[in-house]
Length: 87
Image (tube, rainbow, N blue to C red; front, side, top):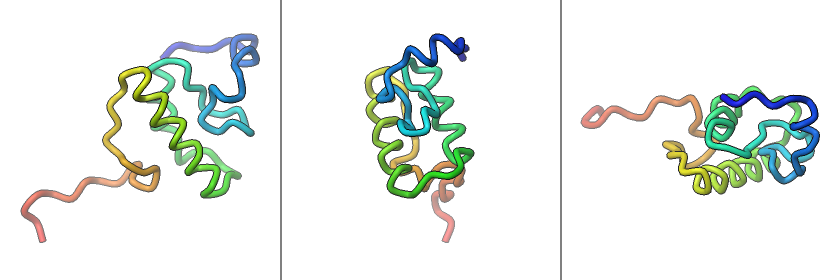
């Protein structure tokens, strides 16, 4: 993943973060988008509404940077998909 310096991170617009208000999980390239998904559940002190908004920003950034998301909702992150043919 591309490492951001403190100055580079400060230079990003608030809208370039998944969690805008907290300025957490930058989304300026594909590597950071993948990292934002991986760390999504580690972000503390945010409401479900803030998570919903962050997920929409991640989905938009993923499309822009051609990152394939396997989850359709942030609530699916970290859950194993059901095995086909198992009841």
